[in-house]
Image (cartoon, rainbow, N blue to C red; front, side):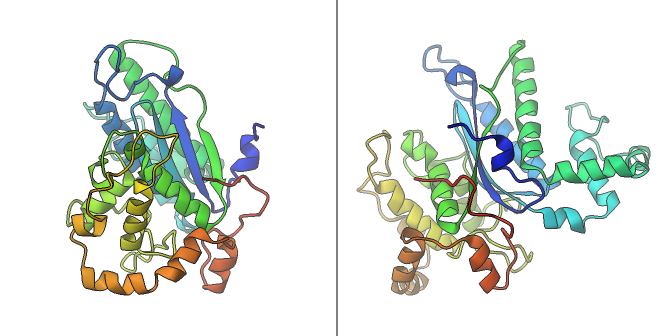
Length: 326
């Protein structure tokens, strides 16, 4: 049964959503066409760059993403508390950084002019509308999908639909759902036999987290797994990045009859492949029983857990929304 979008996405409340957008007719419009051999792999970079740009402007955190040849996934967390904390000028600047009319030769938005800012700041109704949109997962996905479709159609010299329709959306109600969904998304290239391991899955959030952990380019636009004391940002899960990677590696080795790919069984554990500190990992293993029950057992709602921990993230989720299931 189809669920109305208004019953899934509750605007103005903090929540985590799994969003999926598919190319029209399941065509390989962002990869190598198996029939013609034409490659459009560079469009995966477009999608990743656009997600980063929007995450820097919207009150929407990106928890996970995976860009495939004919579809992409993104797991996001809305942050209405961020919107409330912004001044009118900051909200206007963020909006104009994405939707400004002044562009450079490459088509990218220039920093908003003072005249453009004053035009927005002088219109309270417009400012209220902008704040609502900057905190909206629907506007985040609309701004992502429309830009990609226009840019791809322009490259191909075509008109018409690029995506098969509006994005699909599921709300993730508890930590088990968030964890299962993030792993499902991060393992997409492995399951599709596009990559053998998570560290080879280039257009995914786990690829960025792994390379960031190894001292590569930082990815501050990704929502922390277990919080970031330096920035004061809340994490999504009650396990750390190393725990997440180890569990992801184990999950990726499990055979699924409906999927062609899995992490090769003869490979060393990801903790060895990434040269993760073994001494520290011993302590993690000792507490694995507790981790297993948090992951595999029946989970309490994030709202209840957060309340007892003195945190406020994901407050407002009810038990009657659609949950992600594995």
